[in-house]
Amino acid sequence: MSIFLAKRLLTFVATLFGASMVIFLVMEILPGNPALVILGVDASDEAVASLTRELGLDRPAVIRYWDWIWGLLHGHMGTSYAYKVPVWELVSGALGITIPLALMSIVLSIVIALVIGLYAAANHNKPGDVALMGISQLGISIPNFWLAIMLVILFAVQLHWLPAGGFPGWDEGFFKCIEALLLPSIALSTVVGAILARITRSSVLEVFREDFVRTARAKGLSQRAALWRHVLRNALIPVLTVAGIQFASLLTGTVVAENVFHIPGLGSLVLKAINNRDTVVVENVILVLAAMVIAANFIVDILYAVVDPRLKAHDI
Image (tube, rainbow, N blue to C red; front, side):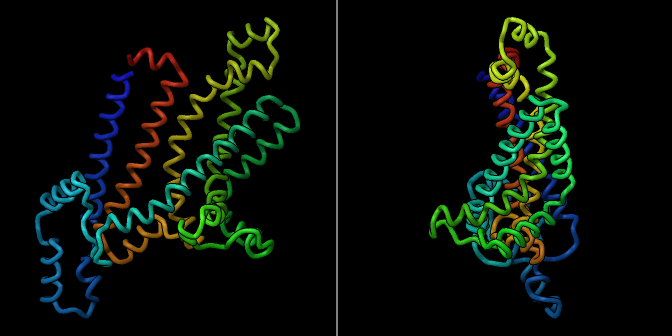
């Protein structure tokens, strides 16, 4: 198991390093001078040049990249050009909102997938199966931003059950914050949950056709018992794969959801930083998002070893 974890950890570090290089190169290619954005278009060339030197943007790109990585290794993300505060203060505050939102969304997606997928598989080709697969296809087709707006109109404007947007802060109470994140998490999890539900149904049906399941059924094991004892664990492997991939799209979806619901998470922070040409904030926020995606896939790899003993035995 230690060899297995070491391999996955090495892949995690290498992928994150590669992502940092891509992020930095893309930000270098993009046009615009942060100093000019800060001072305004009417600023003199001398003032822009002076601020450029002050921000260290006149140094070679290789040196600036090395300084960025070296700072990250020592826990320092730099200072925001626009806000004049450490980037970590901005990122940490936004992470305290985006991570709970992402976790709520992925948990809700998995719950939707298991409930719908298992029920549909257990009632294969019956009216319930057909209806649920039709609903899941509709869920895949609905854009997140449109669903978010519809949820606000229904549950906030019409029914007054949930807040239309904003985030009160964790010091205002745990349940108030969860209430504020509920609508955006539903908007984010609908598409992912619908995709995972279809994958769950297909995977369960495929495992049901395996010889070891037929043998268990022939020995008198009921369909429900076979599902929980033998089928589910084997069927979860492709579901975990797709869940890890969909976590990336879920994180990118938070950019839209946070702006629709006016939630000050990483999505809102990165859009403001882009508008301000605050490249140091953009680079760090995108790297954090990339790290979260890579970490999710790292966790999926570990779960593989738990769910499928063959993988664990092979790596050991």
